[in-house]
Length: 457
Image (cartoon, rainbow, N blue to C red; front, side):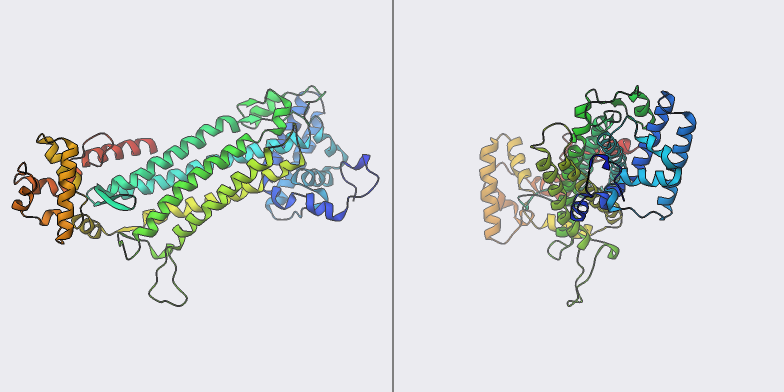
């Protein structure tokens, strides 16, 4: 079968070359974007008088037939036709005959593929925003159910200060909110139309790029045709934002794995999101968060792969850029699955409140409040810090916690201590005392929740 571009060639393409250079195995994902771009383009050609209106109607009808066959699973793509663009054009020619060849007037595969890719990334960016919204709603609901649940807060994975579990969860709400903002902001750069840029220099036909941009929902056209066909910043930005998002998913997954372990016993994940062992019948493995954590690496790899492809390319289009899509497709699949699992997994998570409180009661995470107590009585904080350090050491050496120490033991370290020290050390009071904006105090967390719910609408 002769190539649609084969007029200049005297030999058939080597079969190995065909198989190695063909992209139809993966860029068939762009079939709907490719047809939408073609319909916008051919409509513009007719409106500009470049082809006849009757020819446009025939081509549009043919493209819609091709799309219907694709949706019905009746299309078999050909490696010989290389990519989704040439396959669609060949299918169109089979439907409508030679008039289908007028579709490609005034455009190149270079601006065609760039247009398809923009449309795809735009659509998937909007999907990611919606899926993140669902995850955030699950976090908010769990936070509302745990406004009184106290747990140890950690630094260096060492117990640091008591916090509300709602406060801990909401930290991830804001991480995901920033991810949504990054995705939203990236739409400003995805929404540029390359269509009409041609191979690299534009076209001699009197086309209307503004019309096709508007028809496809783009906000503006690329001012420079060479930039239009060679720009993949929008794909890099999608992969970069996705990588940051996967960092946040991975951090949350790590917490879920830890919290569900026998060592913590802070939460229990629903059976639907866990698996068992083939040899140890007692096991309940948190496989979903573990796999979410593990898949982070492949998203990072996709970003680094595309950065490497692009770093040495001269203007304008180069065949190397065929490598721009598989990493994006893989990232979309990875993120889509991750977010669709994360929302219900968080929503069905059981919180073991009593275990969290027991952990807070049996540690030294209220030590900072004793230092603050002495500082409020006039002792310089650095001196108070040293005093409390000695008290903690004393308690550890005597197998006691701070609430176990008798009043006379406290007074051995400072005569500034009074009987109210025990009230200050109560975990509930420790949490409630954090009244600074953004702190873990109950009123501040409620205000934070109100802010989060307003953002979700």
